[in-house]
Image (cartoon, rainbow over all chains, first blue to last red):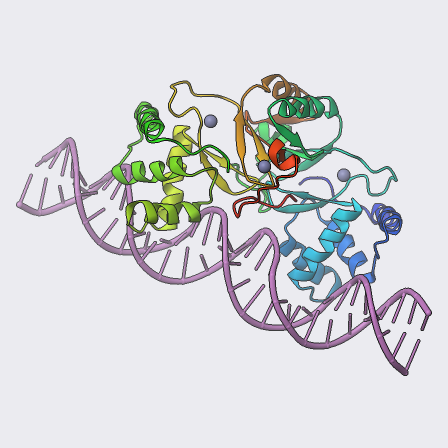
Length: 170
Length: 170
DNA sequence: GGCAATATGTTACCGCATAACGCCAGCGTC
DNA sequence: GACGCTGGCGTTATGCGGTAACATATTGCC
Ligand SMILES: [Zn+2]
Ligand SMILES: [Zn+2]
Ligand SMILES: [Zn+2]
Ligand SMILES: [Zn+2]
């Protein structure tokens, strides 16, 4: 699968990072929120809010209404430690949660076959070019994430390891 | 609004273009499909399948089940005369439907305030750069449309002409 | 304690999308 | 004409993503 699954140690470090991020923005990292974030960190890749609720239940033996999940995810997104993939309606922990540097723009490479997502940040040049062209076309772009769809090398070379989380393209 | 509303003449020309596109791909442009496409062409901008069904009813005094709308839209998308905006779940007629040249990659500029969408095709250089970088990061991108969100000049300068069709950002 | 703000729970609902099944018209074949 | 095939379309039911509105609990602060 997507290889994003965190070890216990990484989860701990990420939680500390989230703690910092929340504190600096006056957001509270309650126990429930911490547990939810843990479930998200342990997930193998981006998952839906409903799936996350199921994971939470499995992980902590406690029901968590979807409504609450969405609210908490919003908090995490505000804190910058969670990303929402608009094109697939899925949420994923920021890969920079443990390290302390927040990032501005983000680009996501999404494999429509196996669902793996890679968070990259080395296309700023193209982003600003696009921004420029949009500007001259009468638009002001958000400094926003780009979601690029395709297939990863593994799936491209015929392995086609499909997962239920993978979304069909188009 | 988005200024994409077609005149009667443009609708006719677009239908002819669609006719050509369908014929070359062995797809049939039935009367019902033609009526649906007309409703889409007359729409002021990208609309949802459900809204399109309502427009169809208003335009032609006949019920059209959403299921059928989706099926027809799929046909049009295959024929290359309709685009689906993944980030907003909306459909729009290709602005090149009347002219005869199909286009490969497309980029959409989407105003999250008023809903206007501009179909542009002058960012191929950036697209291929992104493709290249993705490649070196283990991904094969589709030659796919890019959906860029922001606000148009009008909305940016404070007019903020909100429409029910506009989607909140994020 | 008393109060305000924030966090969480409950219910009910809406919008997007598709699966599964059935019907029917058109068409070619025997 | 009977048969069977194909594609277009209708019907029903359902699943998933997301949120409004309102109720309750918890926390922080004076
Ligand atoms: Zn990130
Ligand atoms: Zn893959
Ligand atoms: Zn187009
Ligand atoms: Zn606008």
